Length: 130
Image 1 (cartoon, helix red, strand yellow):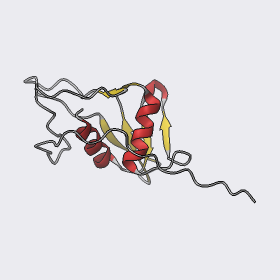
Image 2 (cartoon, rainbow, N blue to C red):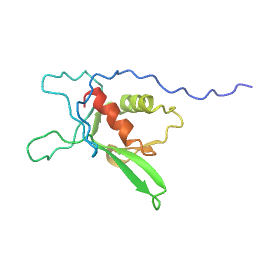
Image 3 (cartoon, rainbow, N blue to C red):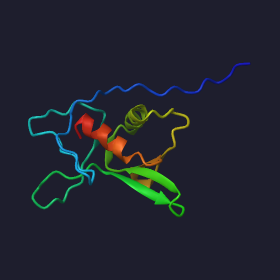
Image 4 (cartoon, rainbow, N blue to C red):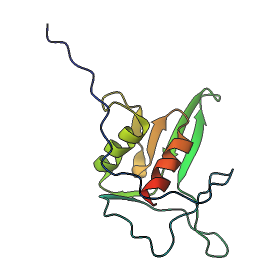
């Protein structure tokens, strides 16, 4: 019969354009300098603010633990713009097939991914220049 082929993992559309000079153990990575021109992505991720000396904040990616510590998820906040484009690129970056990607969108636009993928997501976002 006609077997449904598993949906292929999407290809990345947006190549890495930036290599953070510093990545600290606490997960902070250095953002691009003032002269860096961010490519015209259809989506945007805003770093957290509120560092005392006006220093750049963190990429808003967090790990979350549910159900007595057995279920780990990765939370991505502060995503604006074209969310579908963001999710497609996120799947590509993490190697997730579209139909079974374990991604949910919570109220308020927070994106939740199954498993602890914080480091990978931060590396991906940092590499895009966010």
